[in-house]
Length: 338
Image (cartoon, rainbow, N blue to C red; front, top):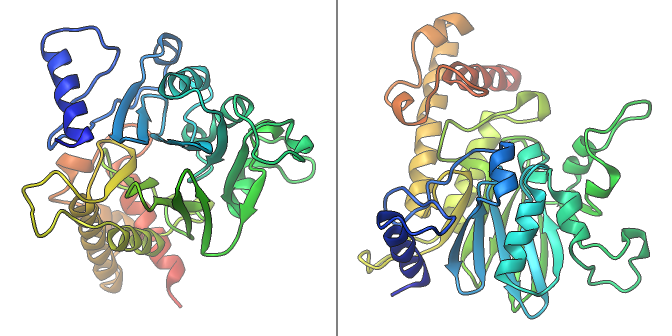
């Protein structure tokens, strides 16, 4: 039985019999349908969900965006850090997983629910580099260059984040890589997807991809046009994710294959990513056809191009509604027209 199966069975049994584990697990196919709460109660109580995906790889949920944690002889690599309010609880959860020092923080975007804990998590760690006095000995924070631009501030403006939370290492090319804890780690820049600073983080031996908000199984993808996001870039990023992941074939009855950690929602596999990609592509095509037919944005919204998917991914209220998604698709397609 795989570690995922053992963890899922143990946690499900604890929930069924009312055992106080401090972990909440729901969802089908052994996946984790993690709660999205970022309120003070969750952060203060340390009520985070920790799931062992591989013997050396964990996911922490309930702190904002999902967090990936790889452990090994070299230390700990953390992908995203959750919200500022939950940062202390995240550090405590990592210390329960391992006593080894946090060496690297990798950010998948500049969203507050993914980078809010950067300062606290990095300061709880220790740099690999003995000469890193400028870091104060803290763990390194790595991201695409555009993330630093979003987290910083132009001259005369105030940054939304403290300097200690800013990335200390950035890159502006398609692929950054490192080799830690006995495996290759690829950080793959996906320009103009959810934003202009998204990355996919692929742990090659663990066979885990941390996708950030490129994949969000709780809603339609957030295409932040104001921050460089586009529907074409989102589909390109999902295509890259589908190409990276391998399904459980030819023995489909096994609980196997590449695991994908989304920004929010349950743990996915390649077929989940494929289904999500197809959904986004179908809606893009519908909106594009309506634009070609000369329809206005209001007419396109009235035509319900997201029909068939709204019950699963849509919302009429909250920070990201179905209309927000359709409008973002429309705006990015119109911008791309010659």
